[in-house]
Each structure stands twice: as C-alpha cells, then as structure tokens.
Image (cartoon, rainbow, N blue to C red; front, side, top):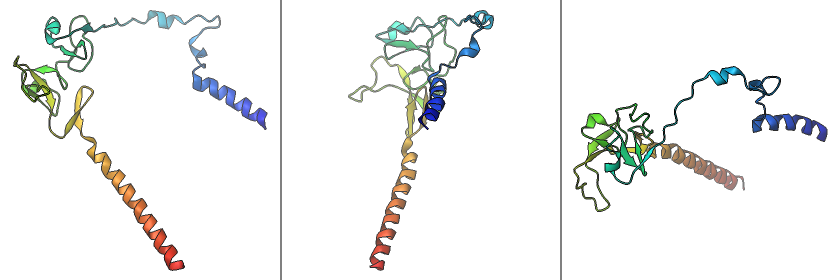
Length: 168
C-alpha cells in the first residue's frame, strides 16, 4: 500500500515543484530558437528621489516611496510615462487628472495643514480607499456577510440548546 503512495506522490510533487519544464528543451538540453528570437523589453529602473524636485526631470512622475513613479505606480520607460491618469497621492492640477473616485486636493500634513508649496495630489473621495493605483470602495460591505454568518451560528446554537431543554 505504501508503494502506491510513493509511486503516486513523487510525480505529483515534481509537477507541483515545477520540475516538469522538459517541454521547453530539445533532446540535447538546449533551448529552442523561438525564445532567442523574442525581443527583450528594456528594464525600466526607477529614479530615486527624496523630494518632488528630484522628479521634475521626468514629466508626469511623483516622488512616492523614494522613487519617481508614473500615475499608475509604474516606472517611466525611456523617460516617459505610458499613462496620463494619476492615482492616489500623485501630483495633479485638476480633478480630471485623477483616477475615478479621486479629487485633486492640497495634501494635508500630520497637523492637518495644507502643503505650503501649493501642490495638489489626487485624494480618494470619502467612502473610497487607496488600492494600488486606484480608489476602490471601502471593505465595510465585507463585514455584512460575516455578521450574517455569526448571527446564523448563534441562532442555530439557540435552537439547539432549546431543543435539548425540551427533550429533558
């Protein structure tokens, strides 16, 4: 019986571990020429920054997390951003610069004071939260199914305990 488990589990483990890549190799272990002919995309390295002034060289970028990033939180390629729409915390001029459910507002510091430079950033509207480069609806709606489930469990326990009491 153990031999069956070993016979079945070893090939299964090899497949799950990713050792089943033989289809990409020729008989002699060389890669096929199709992979060599594919054009390589240039790697876009982000420009590091400490302030927004470091990012003014690349149009459409904002200094976020120490890097100059485009509005969709990607790195600029060849000094340009693919997208013109800007996500949360990116610099903007008007509301139309921002993603859906975001407004172009002066950023607030920890003391809730506006930015002294007069810059504006895309800020998610009330009821929406930052989710990557978008503003998504808050997850409060996810709590409702959880509350319903807890209520049903409690109701089941009450019914079960009442049926035990009547049986005694």
